[in-house]
Length: 188
Image 1 (cartoon, rainbow, N blue to C red):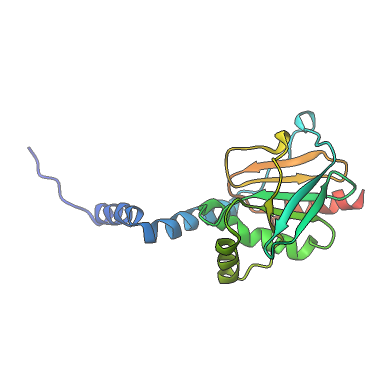
Image 2: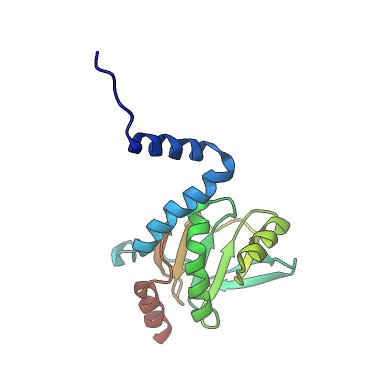
């Protein structure tokens, strides 16, 4: 039997696997891999025949400071909804793009970044990363039409309640495709 010689690529592969097994290095590696996906993956528009309609409703939420409020969805204003978590590598990877989109459109689009985590944990995460996003904690059952078992799941809903984009997994939310769509929806 011929003895196999180790190559440098074998050593790198074994090292990579070991890094994935160590909890402290696993998440940064997963975030980096998802950032590569975000760099090339722009959200897809729903096919016109497949677009669902959200009945107008008020999303009951609590903000990071504990204040309760209701945010209108499908009631005359474009809405961006993101279901996410601080421990989710694809969520972490796409947040910089969401922050850039919010910076550009936050005054004209309802942004709802919804998480089930504790406010203290989310506050530490946001402070550490330097995000200034409208993060909320749902105080009601998610409407059936917006229920999804995966995070991140993001929606762009027009002013009449039509779901224009439903994207599960990390994506580039600051792409020209998304910006053009928002500009078009806001011009209506």
